[in-house]
Image (cartoon, rainbow, N blue to C red; front, side, top):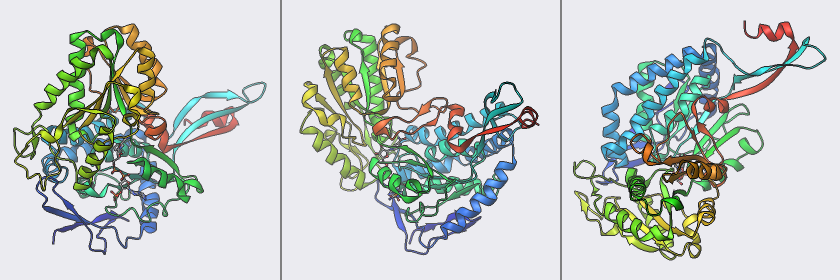
Length: 516
Ligand code: NAP
């Protein structure tokens, strides 16, 4: 039998008492480890996190909590090699793709550690200035933000077991709020291992970090009104969570990052600009293949003027044809596996649904796998679909195929392009391609209300732009509408979710004493 990974809850390591779920290598099909959360006393574990973890964190200043984040960074850096091995085995990712998860996590934590000193040696955040409530300053209202006294429960998706934990934990811990993470079962190993390393290194206060691997059963039932939940995953699961009594009746605050049919848009004025088209083609090919397209921010729709459709289709297909797919342990392989047979099935199903309305411009099924058995490996080549008649292909705006798949779509004019982009009904990110600053800026503002992030790629930024799909801790991550309506990161903006805002109405002397 494979090793059963223990959970860390209530200040101790506790294995579940069921047989557990086996985690597999998606390329070789071998069994790796098991996870199980059966029989855990979640209520007691959560109470310990709130009392011990929350109490200890709130006793520290923001600057001191930043030092804790810095200490976590050192632990993770010291164990990086082990994380890469786990990612290869359990996520089937090539080294560069594992880096977006593992090094992305470490970078995000470091960024918050560096932001902390700016918040100073204090335990609350001021929110605006004091305002008088009467005819003079004798009685005032002052708004403050203090860390919530609950815990932060993270329910995470399978595609970022490292970054998904730390991009949420960094602002939570900096805010003074203890964390309980429930990773997606399929890739829980890396999350569990990182938590284990940090716990073993004893760099965080007791109760500040817990991990529950396996079934989500009972997690939401154990929540109390001052807790918060941050969920990343499918819209279907998000709907179940939103309807749970903890959220619907006990007002537990919830943040949702769900599916998103992100777009890339070549501006009308760049239809015949070879340099700009080249930037678009490179970016789309990269976005389709990084992590085998299993990124919530990946480009799913490529909107181009009708006159550029043929040139972009040819250039993109030629580039995708060069992608070597298969076993990430082989150095010639550029794209590894999907995470499981279930995901492979879901991608094939989604592709079949899109193919009823779109042509196949480049067929991923034609890629021979390198060092991998197609009967076992969850690998699939990148597929580019095409909709020359955009209005006859409504499904491309609705179906998020969570794999290396995108659809090229022709638009008639600028209004048509904006309309098509907005048919995603709220997305995490749209990228714009052009060379005219005024046109790019105007389009960015046009699409700002339906996108959490607008990433503009112009020749003057080609060498320094950070990537359509890369989530930078300095920028907001989240999107309106279909994307879940959530907000994460954005520098210190992320702390808002873990704080409660209060108006303190008092005399000028008391108001001033708050800063003492
Ligand atoms: P999922 O099936 O919704 O699962 C997400 C998480 O929810 C997992 O930890 C899962 O646990 C848990 N879960 C399942 N049912 C639950 C329930 N009834 N109550 C509480 N938790 C429950 O999503 P996924 O397949 O892992 O992830 C893929 C999806 O996530 C894609 O649609 C993608 O767009 C989206 N995503 C969005 C973002 C973003 O930042 N916006 C990032 C990454 C992914 P188990 O694994 O144990 O079932």
